[in-house]
Image (cartoon, rainbow, N blue to C red; front, side, top):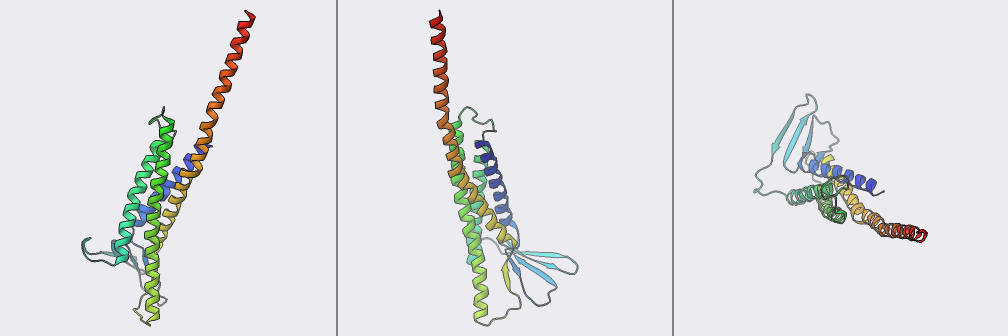
Amino acid sequence: MAALVQMVSFSMAFVSTLFLVAATWTDCWMVNVDDSLEVSHKCRGLWRECVSNLKDGIKTCDPYDSILAEHPLKIVVTRALLITADILSGFALALLALGLDCIKFLKDEPQIKLKMRYSSGLVLGVGSILGLVGSVWYAVDVYLERVRLLLHNVFVGVHYDFGWSCWMGMAGSTGGFLASVVLTCCFYAVTDAAFSQRPQRLMFRSRAVTCKMYAVASRV
């Protein structure tokens, strides 16, 4: 049971980390959803804006100004939160990999490996929360910006909605948080139960050995 929980939690953490990293560096956090006839598909990311021609399939991307330049608050905050979430999730994934029982690292120290898995769950949970806050922050800001334009009867020709990169960030953060719950709660409880049963088994074995020795001595 413990081995199955380890593999499930590691798989969830691995996929979630990939989703977070991909969401950070892809270019479709905002996508145009204009109902009029469009000949191009526009996407905005955290680092650049891309336009794809729907007729010939040519894609051109224009990077934003320098990182030190002034940017909208939603881009600055989302960048900081997603990069921090990527770093924490990557560190948690490495710590979890070393703490798996199938890895020979610290093979004779099961309690240390247990603490490594528990610590990786805590770090992964913090990173997932940061990633979820950044993704939801960006999505809500895009929605509010669109509502403000509609309330003021402002028509700019193109309306934006949050794209698949934003959805990927939210999915990766949610998956990472679920993996952290498994590592910190469910897995720790299962492992504690296994450790608590070991002393009882050893005690029963020692009693059986003592009885056999007493029986042999009495025969002699």
